[in-house]
Length: 624
Image (tube, one colour):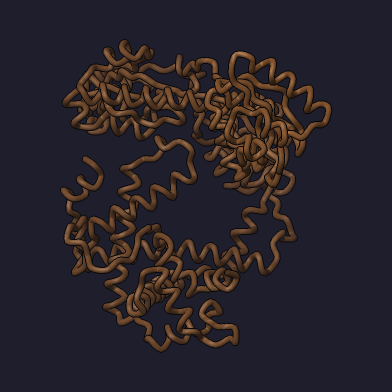
């Protein structure tokens, strides 16, 4: 196992792991290498194709990977997922063809040599073992030729990838300059001019609105909207009846099974039946208390055939006692070898038990676990009721019932969201999975109730109505939006004008306190500070100040306008990064540049190899 783990850490091992054990992760692609191309294509890429089954497998693998990282499946945007996977598969196919065209390949001798060096294929004497290699392939359902072909294909892609990404140049001098920029700091004073404070000073005329509308008509569109009615079912909101002893016993047995523990006590019994069973039992108990043999009394007095064997009934299995199981379990609780119970009234009569052997693990008693088992039993019943209710609602939805009828019949609150938006949705149901269903063409056309959609730990059923598609707004409809935009633009201009006027009067540190506005001292900051907004950080180090002076910088920002005053920019003389860390930083930068170059190269390949997407098969694969 250690040899296999070490092998999978090596570069050929990683390739084999990619090929055989997991989806391929190259350039954001998740896919399995397969045999022949699926005739049902989703894309034709030059002379090659992306098959439907390959595409679906890649989507499923990527979806599983993402869902392992998030708790709420409704947050997964299926459209983006499909788009990214298809792009990745096309990118890979483009590179495969180009690698073949450029003659990038690896010989069998090279692959043989690499595999012979791996410990996982060596025997106890350190020699390559054909038997171990054959077992390795057999376990993965591959032939040697398949493995070599896929190795060769992957290594060829790696060569092409390295030849593109590895050519990125970013000199160490530039790295040092970049690091030095991050080490800069200066004292900053700040005042923000919020545009809202100037809104009352501006006027927006009809001609302003008309001019803006004429210039931006194509961008002034209404949002696609529906009115949404929905019901939501949360398992935690379901009321559960009190649990019974039978429920507790069921959970107790499940606990013992899950813990792989068993009560291995061997027990014997004396069973007494008839009208005088209780009196007989009491007399026998008195004789047992005086030390008489349990086996002898069982043989002489028990009304059960087991008496012939001294009352032996084998290993303890409380389920054979039916509704009396809990009472028997409680009576035997904590008993050791030789201990005897008091007489127990059961549906069989009166029974007295003793433990004759105990070869099992010590199992916690039901009574000691009562609170825990009660909670588990309640949760089990809650989930059972929840599952039944989900099925019932799904069935009603499939039968064409309206959301109002379903809510009434299943006694679930009906909720509504008016003007539910497709874009920039800020409602309580803004999850991509809900949005996709709400604006599904068939759902809107049929005004149907959807099947249950998982949202966190709950399910929702939705019914959209009154669909309003995106369309260009009329002048009257767009006027409120245009008015708001122009008012902000004009108010921001006034704010910026005042900020620049004040900035012009600040030359020295003494001028800072003489201004009509208060500039807040932020102290010494660097380029990574969170005290400034993104635009303010861009302004903060844009101008250098003279010695013993300050520089005032005014600019339009997220809030309207900002005025920043800074003293002379200082750079730490000693870098916190070692030479090794600088080299690593350079490698990261070069790799990022190389990835940009790779994307440019892929765009070039799209012009060389024609790419055609089969929209029909894509729609089928996405369930549309």
